[in-house]
Length: 280
Length: 168
View 1 (cartoon, rainbow over the protein chains, first blue to last red):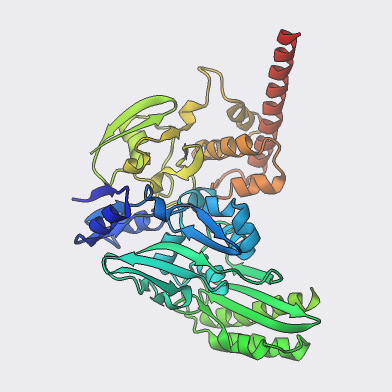
View 2 (cartoon, chains in turn red, orange):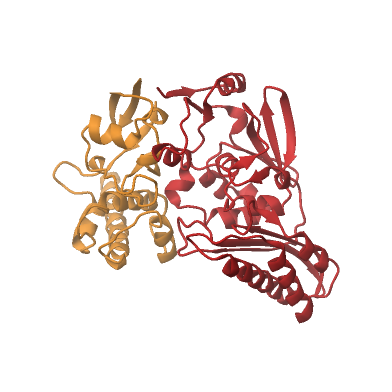
């Protein structure tokens, strides 16, 4: 029979997660659906909502630390986050819906490891680190090294994400996020593309690109990024970057869209972003 | 397991297994059947209630997670036989057809107008993005929210005038 365990401290959390069949319950917006459809059958649900280390938003200069059990709506409303990581706010605004954002968390969205995890895109772009904690102690893992495949992460048994750390970053980033889906709210992306560009006199100083739902994991588009670094953002350069981006993803056909469409839309959105950044 | 929380201002205790959702506790144990189950997976918003003032899908919250917290359901809005102004606005605007989604829409509207007494069209659409209606096409629902905002503003103005008269 399923047990519900509410823990108050990290020590209790570690202890509860060590048990056979224990499952961390964060917002529950994915987990409870999976449980009801029989996809997962945990023996106990461990609720860390009361553990202080996993809650709240702290700043240190330009950097941010967000406890992973902080509801998304709280992050969305935070002035500190809007100033330091505006693209995260842009993305959370179109994640789920009001009801989902009032329950859902970054920890849940990341640990779930969906190829379509919206929050992974801005965190990849800001090069966030995840503070993991477990029986063997704590460790930091870059978001880019956290996902192993659909539903699979580097988290070991008994380990959890304590916080997301977003380092201080350029103030002059031109941000971009576009999620392709059937409707705005509650949609699982067919493809999502995010970007940050620093442009000076028509030349790209630095460009970061990330894509979701077009590969087994959300990922950075490194070859397009490298091609763009230091180049003037003219038509040919932008078109070539779009082609590189389209070549870098490995989408699949599924109920939402075909692989060919996902590849094409990846390139088109990268082009759209760069054209906007060149004109800014 | 036993869970204690507040529902519509009254203390409630429910007993059930760990799988029991807040939705089940409200409907099956407390017989507050105004909250509806639509999809049961957080897509439709028919089961929307306010948990510590915030709209949530009660199908995605375990009853145990409501321990010690405050829940407001559609039954908590009317003042005896008098409908809440939001409920009345939904009636007046013809924003109700089959009615199954209505309690959820009303609860989302309640939270919106508490935080944004004069919402823009965009704010209304965002606040209602998690609620699906398969009958109305939403035009009349948005109209109802606007009417309710006006009605609530007039009520507040009337109350302020009455207070001013008392002090004068």
